[in-house]
Length: 69
Image (cartoon, rainbow, N blue to C red; front, side, top):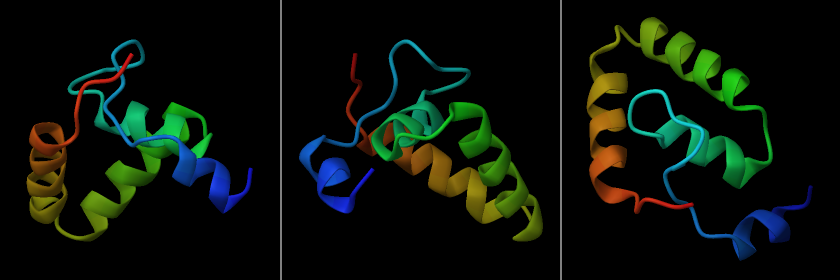
């Protein structure tokens, strides 16, 4: 998938593939990746950064990103 393909689709929360708020599912759909991979990477980065910033970023994205399909 090229960079122009991701730019043509808007970034939104996933309405169908969601565990908590649909943020990681929406990012995975936008990138064309598997949602499980995005979730695992997000958890890993959050743990390595002492979890606190990851939680705040997730909550902010949950509020800012519109709900998609």
